[in-house]
Image 1 (cartoon, rainbow, N blue to C red):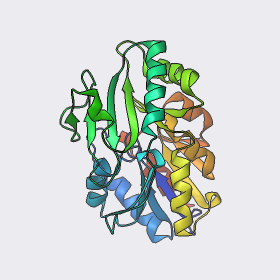
Image 2: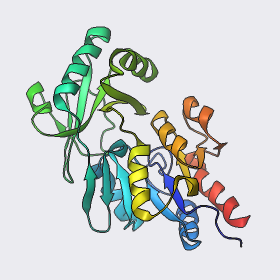
Image 3: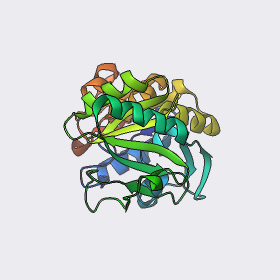
Length: 268
């Protein structure tokens, strides 16, 4: 077996490392373990905030650094502490939200609060996957802005995710960043924040460069990460925008797409 060509393997979670039931296959676990044994570090880079990520990292036996909240949070899983955390300017977010709603009409809203125990608040009409992840419902809009936030989630009653993302970017692109992170998940982030931001910070802590990194993802919010890494691999189930900029397209998350690529690299 030759040496593994990368020192860092960066993987998104939903639609990438995780299957639809939020499990990780034994084959993918074994491939990541083999890559680690060959000298590479594995780092999770997810749009989920820490409270929605921690149980998955614990299940993996993951004790390294993870990038959460679309890059806003760099989290040390082994020490259970935040190394960095960037919050959304709530006044600016409120202005952006009012401009978007003036353009497209009322939105259903949710928000992710900052911190290790930061709750996810969900307002009236926001569609969620029942039973998957904990959240707190709210009725009073003032609750949304009562504590520091990492991001806002937007949903529209009739526009598709692509249509809402485009309309929001055209309306407030100079104030905040807008990303589509998954089905029904369009987010308002601090301007300039992306997965690449958090990944570059984490990689620096690990002493690893972009040229030594392979990244796996499935949604448009992974595009900056692909731009930063030496090699970007889109899952077979990935959004067309990500496939268009990927260096390689593998099989789907249900078909062990990460393992397929890593096994080929390890066997080369």
